Image (cartoon, rainbow, N blue to C red; front, side, top):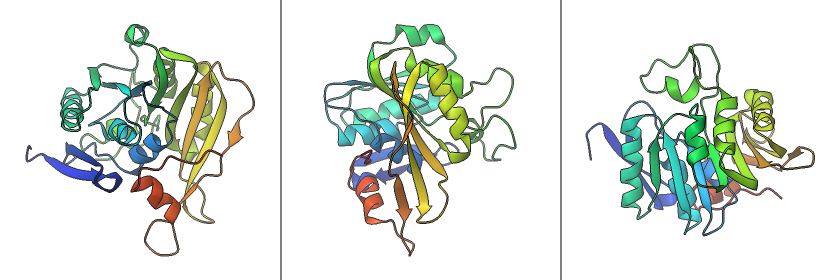
Length: 247
């Protein structure tokens, strides 16, 4: 392993992830996103902006037998994602490309589920650490916005397939508009509360290709209890690889 990388354990050690020591590093968002994908063994899943592969690795640890297709613009991160997949015994297909490439999206095989943790801020001051600005800010001429991410993910999505995005709660309206613009509806909103009684900072949005019906709000997940630790429900998701409860 390169000195520029660290080895981190996710899902209570079920996932070993080599990722850059500085810059784009996976956190809770990747694990929570993976827990929300309603995939079943044998299905095809697509992740855009996979980084070093944390989200699809966590999904595969929970749901075996998936066909995984992942897109990453950064060649170094794409190589790490391939290495991590191979170390986990996964035959993941990691493609180098950009979500603005609609022709590439149309060439992908039909998918049952598509998901991303996209850059979410269209402006403002990006973080100073090199590599992190592309993770959080979709700024600059020609930068891909949420609509570009949603349209790319929706292009190969089968009818009634799910499209999932994890976003800051402040980008809820933009995320729902992006899903609708990509032809996905019946949106389900699942909030993540830092603590009980505290406003949600992150949300998971999930809609279906050619879906119907009104938007709904799921019960959500409280992450931390009265102390410093996670709640039992959060522990089940973050350490025990449980799926998120959308009931």
